[in-house]
Amino acid sequence: MSATEQTPSASKASMQAILAKQKQAHISEGAWDVKKRIDMMDRAIDAVLSYQDEIPKVLAEDFGHRSQEASSFTDVMSCITTLKDAKKHVAKWMRPSKRKVMFPLGLLGAKGRVDFVPKGTVGVISPWNFPVNLTITPLAGIFAAGNRVMIKPSEFTPATSAMMAKMFAEYYDESELAVITGGPEIGQEFSSLAFDHMLFTGATSIAKHVMRAAAENLVPLTLELGGKSPVVIGEDADIDVAAARIMTGKTLNAGQICLAPDYVMVPEGKMGDFVEKAKLSVETMFPTIMDNPDYTSVVNERHYDRLKSYIADAEEKGAEIVEINPANEDFSQQEHHKIPPTLVLNPTDDMKIMQEEIFGPLMPVKSYQAVDEAVDYINQNDRPLGLYYFGTDMSKANKVIDSTTSGGVTVNDVIMHIAQEDLPFGGVGPSGMGSYHGYDGFREFSHAKAVYTQSKSRMVEMTTPPYGDKLRKVLKMQIKK
Image (tube, rainbow, N blue to C red; front, side):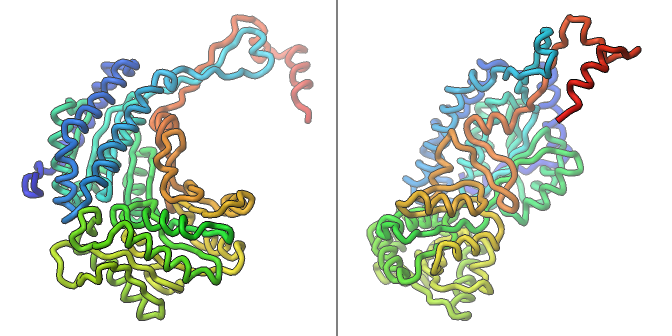
């Protein structure tokens, strides 16, 4: 499906009509039972399976070139495994949670519980870097919690957005799930709708606008953003392993990942060793880059120019640029927007590459003398979505983990904590708000409703006038340290 075949974008009135339809259906049908929630997830799995061959094709169309195998891994398989995990556990997640009641009410027969009930309709604004994955994986928690959903996919991947609109229309009524396509003006209108919850995945700068729009209707938000996720290589780390895993993470989707390692801090004296091992790792994975089917393009000219400007700015301000180009290919003339993995050594904070999230195959590398120096540097900047530590001494690893604040951590690898369904995925501060995946996703998209059942005992009436000795005795017992 080409970009020109994209479905017509909606008006605000038509979006409001769909939302009203979903909210009315939620009221009239009531909360879905476990069978219906599993059915919603099963249909999502069936949709992905039926489009599993087309998904990599449209992603490649939108990116110029994108590895078919990588797309099958990140935007097909990952969606299915996430939905299957939620299906397996949803019945358990739905059970009410028994809670204790205040003394002495429990002794008198009073009861307390928490019911996890659906919020209603969740609005999802998904990004362009993993457009299928980051549209569908949240559906696991959204459907497990019993919600309906309206989706606004990115205009930067129009062929993929159009495909998802067509795909979902085949498997869902719009009272259950609806896809709204269109440009930034539609996204702005979408974010101003009175959803019962909204999930936005994307840039921090755009999140501020989404949050302002949501505030008009007091819509609760989950924000999955990004930032500059640091890597700290410990003195005792295996540099071969560290360099290989870091560069694998940095070259996946050409670094266009919210959790991509954004800069590396290496012990002083080990910079040269890291550079050589990084080169070797890239040469092993990508003997050539220009026409290599495994190496993904930068999504469009705008982002290509942005990344090239970071390199030019860093070089002008004194950084050493190491382009890893095993076959010495000429990238000045190419069909697609490919940039080879590029190390930027000894960057300074006045360089653009150290001020903004990179979202590309560029890797600044800084040296440090003591681990406290690395920790201090991380803490001087915005709290990142991910933090990565390499080393065998867990006491040193824990020192870095405990002394910094980040959305999540992977030790002796990068990115992988996002792949664990039983771990929450989310940011903190400028890197996000709220989290999902697994049970945490179910909770994020549910309302925890307190339910208290009063005791039949007449003793509970001691707190009603006229007050007497019994209440005074209770007060005397409780008002103390």
